[in-house]
Length: 75
Image (cartoon, rainbow, N blue to C red; front, side):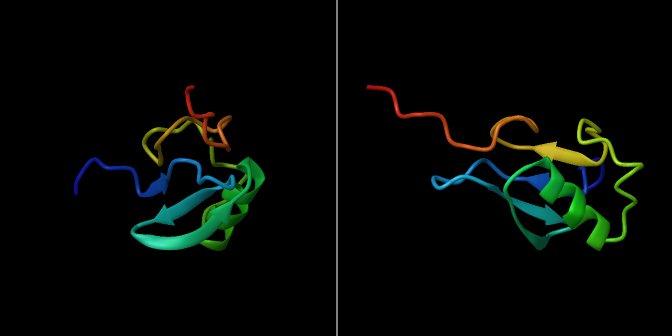
């Protein structure tokens, strides 16, 4: 799909961490921003040139790079 960022960081899982996909490939479960950068390095990107706020590269679902746990259930 044209115009869609190639990296997707999925919403936090119940136990913490977020699933990371690049171009549809599952890169792993990241526990924080450093893990995302490592996955992107393994995928061939230079982590020193990647900005986690780059919406042309990364689509954050369920919160940005500062959210790594699900919010508590209301009630």
